[in-house]
Amino acid sequence: MKHNFLLASMALAATAALGISNASAVDPSKTLLINDAGGQWVEAVAKCIDEPFFQKTGIKVTHEVPGGIAKLLAMVESGKITGALFDGETGEIEQAKAKGLLKKIDWAKINPEPMFDEAKQEYAMGTSFYSTIMAWRSDAKAPGNFVEFFDTVNFPGKRALPNYPGFILPFAALGDGVPVDQLFPLDLDRAFKTLDRIKDDTIWWEAGAQAPQLLQDNEAQYAISWSGRVAGKEGVTISFNQGMLDMSWFMMPKGADPAEMEAAWLWLHEHTVKANQACVAQYISYPGPSPELDPLLPQDRLGEFPTYSENKKVQWLTDAKWWFDNVDTVQKRWEEYKLQQ
Image (cartoon, rainbow, N blue to C red; front, side):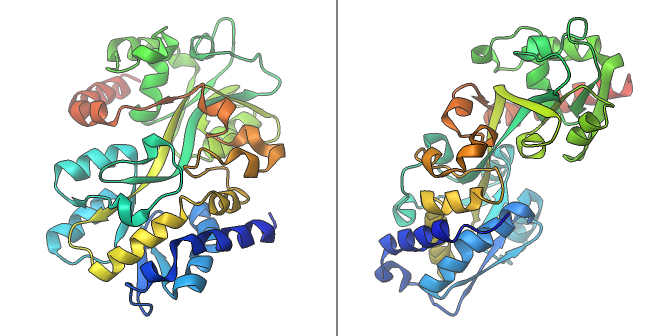
């Protein structure tokens, strides 16, 4: 997809709102090291945020793979911190907090533009949204909710399901009729009841690319998939109804270099600028946290974006604290279930 130079110009203009006085506190010869998972989103960020940020501040941003809590823990325990920011999943925030690995987010220094409330936490900032949703072959009967999705009698066909408890058990509970507003605390008995019922029609996937491929090859007729993997795929229809809306986060480790910390607050501000987020959206359908983003998104692709107002309002957010508190119970039940397959 070609770069949208108009949006890039808008993004650069928007960064001027911070002013040189804030950036002057940072040594312009420093390199801001970001620990993350890499991939297409980071490639888009490099074009839409890192390059304009360098032009404005003289701070060069580099990305190191991998990020995540395991690397964060090892660095904090060793006292050798490289990088001021680590990416992480929602559940990893609770783990990192419990282990005392994190510095609180300085929201005053980030000085964010309008953001969705759920993207602002005490110890983490959400920078991109993604969803786990239902998808099906366009020539299959369309389910309207997860009760219908898991109804293999009236909606016959194979189900491609994620082989990860956090990405399947809540949907299985919905499939047994649990209302969305009563999803947590999660009823594991009802979730596993659903999975037992459809076990002969289940294909488990582990890599995100598998779900759309199984649909396109007609090996499965229905799937639960990460939205960015199935959106826009030929012959595949998607629905965000009852989907799980989630975020990728950045966390700051205790013991990070003070100069890099100052640079990191400035860099995180750029992720709150809606024009920057719109630029990123030209490359990948994982939008940023601005509630004012819809008019700037590609209008012919609005339905692909998790935070598009019509999609966001029909989704739910996971309960990271519940998962953290119940991880041992869930893991034990999951392993027992898988051994029976």
